[in-house]
Image 1: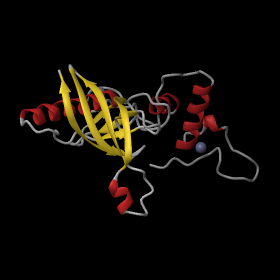
Image 2: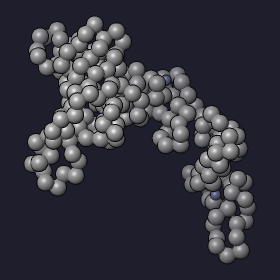
Image 3: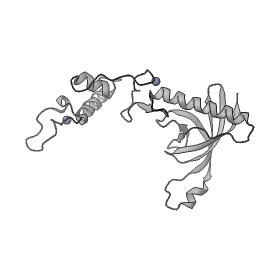
Length: 198
Ligand SMILES: [Zn+2]
Ligand SMILES: [Zn+2]
């Protein structure tokens, strides 16, 4: 459903209405942004705000499949994640799911006695090479050592990403998991467990 903008739909003669009276997606976001900048309505999500202001246009936000409301974000992102089974969940539940998957992966890999464990679930390298995070930037592990450029970056000469080897350590439940991986800032990393200390 597209809601036509009444505040910014013609350059001749200026706006027909003030932008805070316009229910379109752009104007409601602008209003929400400005109120938060002014310290009014902090903590009200954009979808809640739209419902408060224009209840006839925007239905009351529903709970996600995990039973929680979408996470309040700083304006980037929707506040919800979609799992493997197409279930929607808040960022906290999404993080719990990643941590559970890491714990399962480490248990399996150290039961079969291999030196390097099974591949770990997807984590992302932060832009400053300091952390591994969930896709929405929540901390999972700390990167220690960053090594030389990974070979396959050289094989594809048009590859702008500088993938590097790194080591990282994260605490998941009662386990301290040491891992090694290859990745680039802002990109997902391919990691394996090296050691788990329980
Ligand atoms: Zn508008
Ligand atoms: Zn949740």
